[in-house]
Length: 247
Image (cartoon, rainbow, N blue to C red; front, side, top):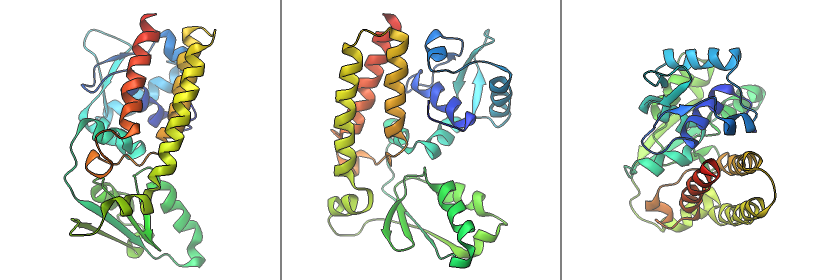
C-alpha cells in the first residue's frame, strides 16, 4: 500500500480486513502478504508500540491476531477520516481552525499543514479551515508547548443558517471526489474481470482504494446524504474482500 508510515498502515489493515465491530485480524494471512505486508521484526516492534499506546490489542490465544481498540479506531480516523462516520453519528458540530503563521516561518506553517492534512479539514476562507470531525483535543495535544501554539486558534460551532450543500461543495469539492469514486468502480470492475489470482486482485483493489481514502474528508451523511457514493464504495469493498478471501 502507498502508506509510508508503518503505524498508519497497520491501523488501516486491521480495520479494512476486519469489520465495524473491530474483530481480530490474522496478520499472517496470504492476502496481507500479497499487499507486501510482512509480520517481520519492524512490524512486531510497531505492534508493541501500538499495544502500549492502547491502540491495538492481541486476540486471546493467538500470537499473530490483533484487533483495533476504540482508541485505535479514533487514531485511525485522524489519518483516514472517512471511517469515523461509517460507525458513529455526527454530533452536528463544526470545528474551525485558523492559523496566521508569518511567511518567514514558512517551514513551521508547512509542517503544521502536513500534520493536520488527514483530519478532514477543508479551506473555508484564507487561513480558515473547517471540519465536522472532533479534532480540537488532538490539535491541542499536537501544538502544546510548541512555537505553533501562539499562531493557532480553534473554534467549535453549530450551523445557524445558509445552504449547507453550497458550503460542502465550496470547502470540500464533493463533485470532483464523486467523479473519482466512479472511476474507482470502473477500475475495480476491470480488476475483478481480469485473469489475475485472488491475491493479486485484492492487492490492486486495496491499493486503488487507499488512494481515494487518502483524500476523502469523511463527511457525515447529514452533510452529503445517506446514499453518498463513498459509503457505497465501502460496502462494495467489504463484499469484494469476502468474495476474494473465500474464493
